[in-house]
Image (cartoon, rainbow, N blue to C red; front, side, top):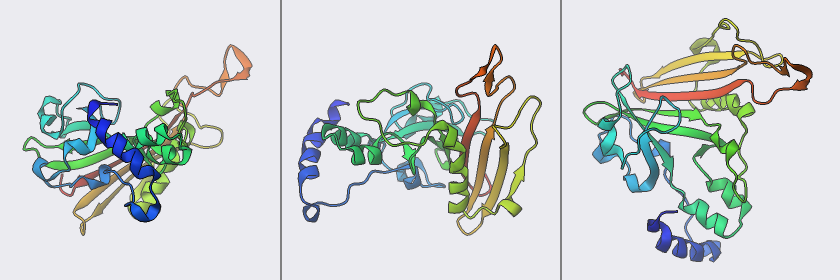
Length: 250
C-alpha cells in the first residue's frame, strides 16, 4: 500500500466502526465513471485509480504510466487509439483486510465487475479524447495468494459475463450476434462451443457496443492428458468475455 493511504486508512478504519447512521455509503470510481467523447481534463482524476500502464489489447499491463495524460507513451492500436490500462483504487480493500471483514473484502478486492475479475482500459485518440473503454475478463486473480481470498468467479465461468453485459446493453442475440465457426483445431469444452461476436449501435447514447464471448478448447488443448488418458488436464480451455464501447462513428 502506498504512503498516500496512511492517513486515509486510519480515518477509514474509524469510519468502518461507526454506526450506519453516522456514515455515508462507501464507494469508489470504476470504468463506468469515464466519459466517452470527453477530453482528459473532463475525466476522473488519476488519483481515483491506480496502476496506470500502457495496455496490451485487454491483456496485462506494459510500461507504467502516471495517469491519463501519459497516453501518448503507448503505441497506437491499428485504429489509431492508445490503450491506457488502469486498476480500481484499493484503499477500501486494505481497510477491509485490516478488519478481517470477509464480506467487505469480497466487495472491494481488486478490479472486478459483478464478482468477475476484469482488466479495464481507456482508449484515447491522438488529441486526448476518450474514444472508448475496454473490459476483458482477467484470470490473474486465481494465482493470488492473499491471506483472505475474495469471492470471485473463476476463469471457467468467465464466459458467462458475456450474457450479463448483453443484457445490460440490450444486445439481442438473434439480431446483433453471430456464432462464429470453430477455427482449425478448436473443439468444444464438454458439449459447449461458444464463439459469439456481437455488435450494436446505440444512436441515443452515441455509442457502439462490441461484445465477444468465448468458451472452447484451442488447438492442442484437451480434457485428458494424452500421456495418461485417465488423468484430467487443468485449465486447458479458453473462457473469456470482452466488452468494448466506442463513441459512435469511431
